[in-house]
Image (tube, rainbow, N blue to C red; front, side, top):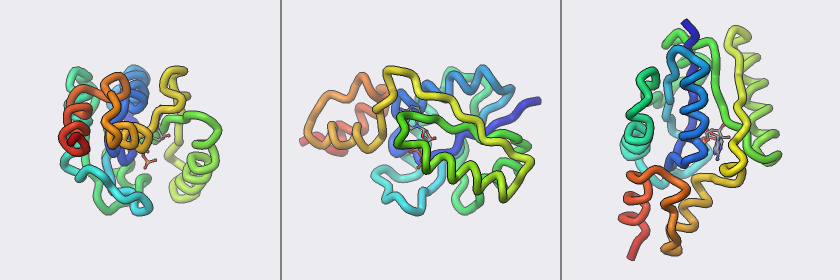
Length: 160
Ligand code: ADP
């Protein structure tokens, strides 16, 4: 059984994340989406809200489960659910340094766990949670960038 985790802050989940989740769900028998507090990023939505958004976005994927890990190293969390792979998405070159250093660190912490990258879909290459929030703050239409439940929540949060 091939088990992977896809960790992230998903603040909030975008269609770029959803694409990685859908493609990942085909590559692995079981995929855990792991939400955590990113200690270096100030969250816009609470962990509960973010978890709920991810659940609504992947409700149709039978082998995908959404879970919260509050204070644990990613590799330790992977081990605790029997995962041997950490799945991450790679967009433009800007992601590379951060993702590469994190993959190196995780490999040092636990050489048994591999980080696997899926390249972003062409149409999602420049899509990020922070960009979507900027657009929503200025009342822009974000409906083509995020799942419906997220578009509603962004409107409720930033709409006037
Ligand atoms: P983190 O705070 O852990 O970086 P993010 O929610 O920002 O969490 O991102 C989680 C993962 O999803 C990262 O590997 C990131 O590169 C990837 N990702 C973010 N946006 C996209 C996108 N538009 N297309 C593909 N992958 C993406």
